[in-house]
Image (cartoon, rainbow, N blue to C red):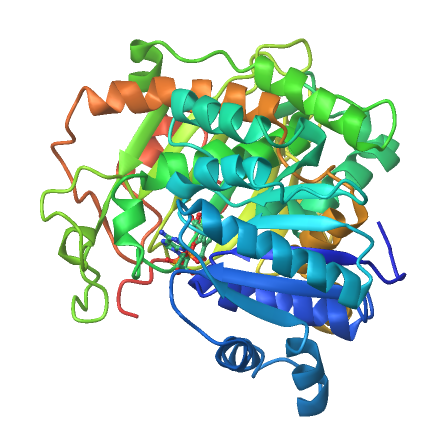
Length: 495
Ligand code: NAD
């Protein structure tokens, strides 16, 4: 939604000294400020354990804005809206101080009693914080109250449900904004407009015409300094349950009745309910996992098990590929192949829609299938592989590409994923956030795979080299039905 009017709110950031706050939230808020979405009537209270002064806090924020456009004076003026409170999440008295400061800033900045509570710290604290927000009366009774929650939302269905029950004591579902930043990406947001404004796509978006769909979310980086978290998660929990599933839903959900949050979320819920959790035998047949070994230059890229804070015998997967079957009229029999991994040849997210070949092959050579590729990142656009006539004295068909990608200049003008989603929170649009029903179904689907894997230790880790597109088993998954991955990056093991 385009919104150029100024938004009014007091934002509490729990975990204000952290990495996420400095790398994502402060730059995003500054860009919203530069573009006048927030201006005079906003204030931010950052909380964390350390004992910082407001000035010190503002300095750290200023540093996080170094690379951004905007004058020094503008950045200083922006940081003046920020206040710091050291805070121990379990100490009730600290919430009383937070409330008093909030009330004061509400008056000073005329934020109309609008409050956003942003959880940017370890998930184990979310329930305690939500409890205290309610018991110590931090909720405003004048404006809106909205809770923003970062991933991971639980580590399985049961813990997600416990967390949801806990935050639901203080916030209603429509006040909860569960962030999945892939839902703020331009081409992910573009999926519904593309599918439902082009009859030439909409009419053929089903099992009659589509052979398979392939969703790839590749990262070039390894685990970096996040082993503490990653060792308890792995690629299945970290990427599949949320980002992959959300992209899958937007690619395959039924036409919503209208383009509003309630309808879109309802169609997503129906879609996720059509994913039946797999039996152990189905998990073995349809999902594979991998863990990266060193690249050809191990000093540059060591094996996962050699990374800092990783167990040298770690069974954690850094790569997942699988076939997901949607049990409904539109898709039954169409495999949705997904894969995601760390230390692959390059960072790339894309969706390949592979159509069935033409049923009437009247030419001397069979024509290739149509393929529609949606590039989500780093380039953002669409390519269609179609057939024409080979040039010359022949009627032989040949494949050609039609392609459109947004220019860098154009993309620089628009809000990035975090900016967009924070703005959505401020204007109260929860279309691009995950509803509890979606998490319920996706966790149940993912839990069945996790449980099977946890019952069998992997014996072949590491099973792919850093700089390659995952283990051989990921290719075999498609090869057994005569298919292959459309996106095949070149190995990059010498980087
Ligand atoms: P971080 O460790 O850098 O920051 C944690 C913050 O919590 C710090 O400000 C710390 O002072 C505060 N904190 C910790 N214990 C506290 C306590 N007992 N009382 C008060 N404050 C306490 O973590 P992060 O990387 O910024 O991640 C924050 C959240 O965002 C996590 O849920 C994480 O999973 C999620 N997330 C982070 C990233 C990322 O890129 N960093 C990406 C996606 C999701």
